[in-house]
Image (cartoon, rainbow, N blue to C red; front, side, top):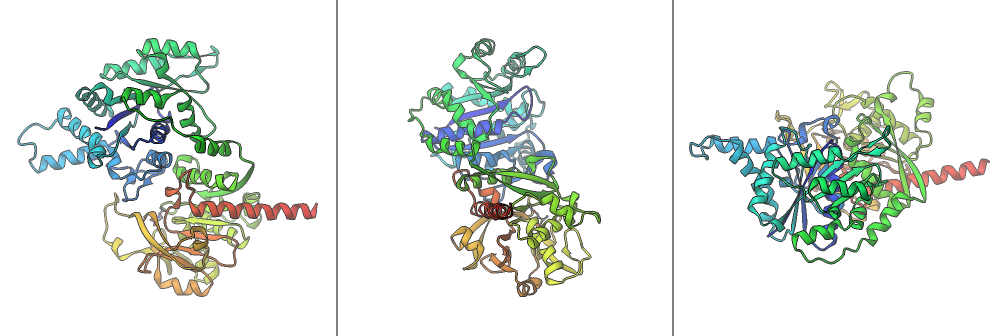
Length: 549
Ligand code: GLN
């Protein structure tokens, strides 16, 4: 019988419930337990695949092609476990299932209602991971949104019923709240936390563990007060103070014995975890011996969550390289327009030792991205293009290296005389937007003797995708003649997955999203090599500066 943890949040959103859940998962795994994490989101989209990154941050993609909430990225990174489509549920998906059943007549003439039909479906999904894999010890389910929202009520009601149906030692409710510091009063306030726990209790769920998100430690007096008002022993009220790196959170929780107390509640005998390796890693992240600066040229730069996995992949890649990667966000639209000449570009990218062009959709900022590629290519600045970044590299080199006037992508330039990026036949008839792209893990074969092979150290790889458009094979030969090497393709050779430019110190672009598979303990080989190349570039610059001084 698996144990079930439910993570909810109150007072405000954006408390970091995803990191808290992932950290708990990390600790339980370190105690030898098999842990699966899942996220239930109360919104009505069937999945976040059709949502703009401005709304909800990055869409994370799993091996099986599920388009998920970005918290699943944290779960995978903190527990080093690949999740699947069953681990992300939305109200939209719940209703989709129920309405399909209703149309099939499966409710035998009964009125279909939130209780019991919606709550039954949610309870079925709570149990599903452990049902499909009986070796799972703990299922951690995070509920999106904030306690008190109308939308999340069916989820909380399902949890209430679920807890009632299990022995008390089989479930635990973990609640996160905000403990604000009021500047004018010069003190922290516990009232919002009391209200939030009371609200949860009024739905029928007593919090078993409370994590107080605060700028600093809340202190013993506040802890006792919160414990008293929230009906908890003080040792189950935890500090969730702000940290320098999210990877510190498991260490903080462990220091407060959260994993031990949780196992005690579950009556699970587990050994103390060995967190020494994780601790060493965190030390390097928060006290890096050196820095390197990399420009990220995108269109969602105001919202860092839109590129969450890239940010994390750089943190991971910094570890073996013994540096912190300082990310310089460049709005691709700011690189457009007549007035932005070579001098201006040099100013913008001055001091950056690498340029990354990430994925994206639509035509906004494309010309700016193309300029960024050109700058990196012509100035021997290490370059990594991801998905749309590869497509922009094809456009740039098509125009400026191969000599194809107005080379473009069919996505945003349907009249281009040279559509070097186009829609594959298989994508042409598709009208629906949800879940219809090339999604999830696809195999790729790497050409021997290439930069790609040096990065990966292997020839057979598998990477995650999320895109509709592809390199147009009609142009491959012309690009090859101009010096571009298509160093990775699908096993049948028909889909270009990686391209590179020999002669340039580091110029590589990929049709997939390497950032989705990077883990702190296993940095992605491309990011690792890219950061190493940026470091080499910085070293060369420093030497040149010393020589002239
Ligand atoms: N918009 C491009 C496509 O659909 C690239 C997508 C991406 O970068 N994820 O092919």
